[in-house]
Image 1 (cartoon, rainbow, N blue to C red):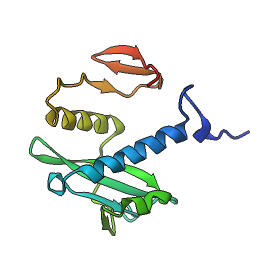
Image 2: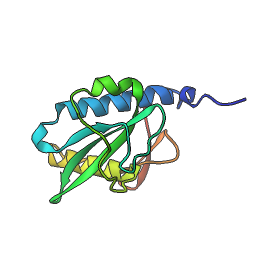
Image 3: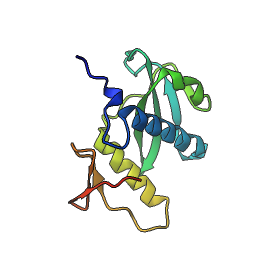
Image 4: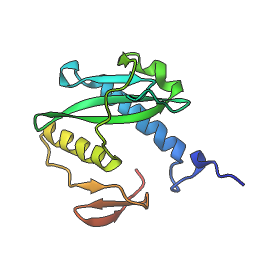
Length: 144
């Protein structure tokens, strides 16, 4: 019997719910970014002309140490019209090779530069969604 991965849960949230949150938070972040802080865009095609059926790419550039780095996500087609405020490109810019961990590190660096609060300790993605590694220590996530 095939598994419906969208219904898999950590006991609090389904994957579908978490991805919906991630997608909408990313779009809200892009909507609130000033145009002068980096290019943000959407495209139905990757730089090489390929695509994934039912998905499109959304990306932005963050300035890090005098260079622009990317944060990109594939979003479901039903969110295309929600991205009307983004520049629409025929093809996405060349992918810089970033990984999910690179995205986490880039966002943390971005946040540390744009807040007056104490820098957040480094975090990394783990196999267990209930675990978060902060400052090299494993911590259980608690329900928010």
